[in-house]
Image 1 (spheres, one colour):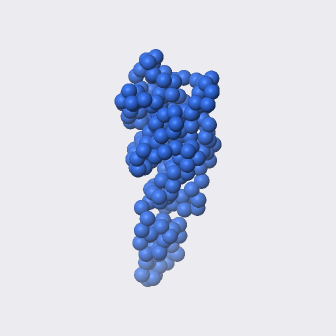
Image 2 (tube, rainbow, N blue to C red):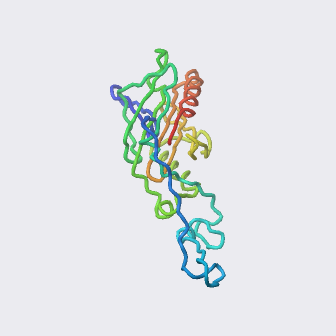
Image 3 (cartoon, one colour):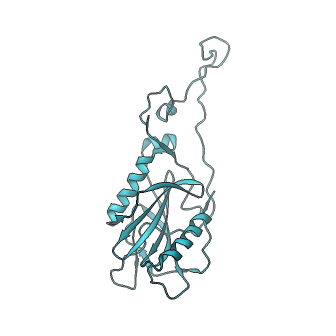
Length: 235
C-alpha cells in the first residue's frame, strides 16, 4: 500500500499498512475426527466404533490421501481477527498523527494509524504505519483446513508490491508477528524505502510498515520498528 500526506501534493507514503490496536482475538478451532460407523473397528470387526479419517483432512495433508498440496510447505492460518483484535505499544518518542491516507487499498481497509517521531528533525514521511484489512479469501483449502502454501502468501505480497510499483531490496521472508507466521520484506518507491510486515489470518490482514526517506533516518526508524513489531499482541 501507499500512505500519502493529504496536505502535500503527490507525496507517496506507507506502502502496506499502519497498525492499529484493539482488543484480543478469539481462539481458533480445529477439525475434530469424524465418528465412524458404529459396530466396526478399524479392522472391520464387530463391537467397536470404526475409526475413520475426516474427509476434509484428505485435502489437508493426510499421508495416504494423495492430497493436492503434497510436497508444498504449508502455513497454518489463524482464524483470529488479526486486524480487529490486535493491540500494540506505541514506541517512546512517537505520536499518532493525522493527515495521511493509504492510496492503495489491497483489501477492505478497516483502519489506518500513523506514528511519527516527536523530534522535528525528521521528514513527514519518516514514520511507522499500521493498517487493518478484512475480506481476505484464500479459497476452499484455507476454509476447510486453515492452511495455505507458503508460496501463496509470498505471491500475495508480490501482488501488493506490483500494485504499488515498488522495487524489492531483498527477498521476502517468513517471520513471526505476535507469534504468528507473517511475511516481511524491504521495498523502495521514489520517495522512501520501507520495511513491511504482512500478518495474514484466514480473513484479515494486519500490515505494519516502517519507512524512511534518508540514510540518517533509517537507524531510528528501524529501531522503533522492531519495538513496535515485538509489542504486537493478537489473542
